[in-house]
Length: 418
View (cartoon, rainbow, N blue to C red):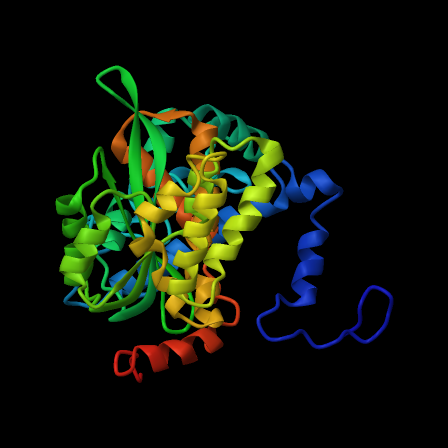
């Protein structure tokens, strides 16, 4: 065959719609509106294909094609069709849903009671994950698809992920995570007419391949060793057997809980958090100098050298900066463990930036929404935001192979071989 210029038409690649068919369809259109307009070809073609696919599902359900005779032992028959309007990414489309006499047909492409198709619900979930309010989603959908959606419909779509969230929170974990980071972020929720701050705790694990995984999330109004022991016990019940280093900061009772649940795990306080906390009341003009002097401490070759430099700094500058060095001295046992490691491991455990990168995605969604109507709504939003962040977050840690080689030496016999 030849194309419209009279040249031999190239063979169509596998899976591509034949060019002759495309030409025939295009002949039905006189302009852009006839292709993508309100009643354009794309919308009509979607409706026709969906109706045809549903007819195929019915044929599979009954065991015979339209126009054929059913098996003699079959009492079920076709019973016409019913019209149905569904929301698609191109607006509303009218389709024909086949029926059977016994009412046992359960369509899979467009399930019963469903009014959406072609990823429409996924679009709403994606907008919700980015922190858009119900009103913003309504406006956005109306502008893009010329479809009006009600607040109840948006709520039903977002509620549909609750079962997925519950399954995710109880899914099995890997047996070993060399590093686990735990941090908290704050969400504003409404309870009994009052808006309050609620802490949401996230645990991120780095597996033996260096990939980052959100292990779980929990909401609680207060912290303590008993609470954290419950969290760590839950992770153990889900299959987590060993953690080499657990990094966190400012979470009351966590270090005691780690010692009880994972006695071989090293607890490491985030150095960056400690620097921020200790220099909070240092003037801007002095902060750069103080941070440069603190760097001499946490880049020391050994813990003994770090302790000596810290005491010297406290003697030299403690009177001028009374709030800077005391936290380092009081929490020495929490921040010095990483000094026992080589530089390859120090780089990945001295800060919780791994989890902070995820928190930035989530905080952006929470900030956009202001406050949420309930704790469940906050957890749904955090989960969806975290899932959306996986597109760019979660990749393997840089130079992880070098760090893993050091882990294999320092934690001999604890690195899984498979």
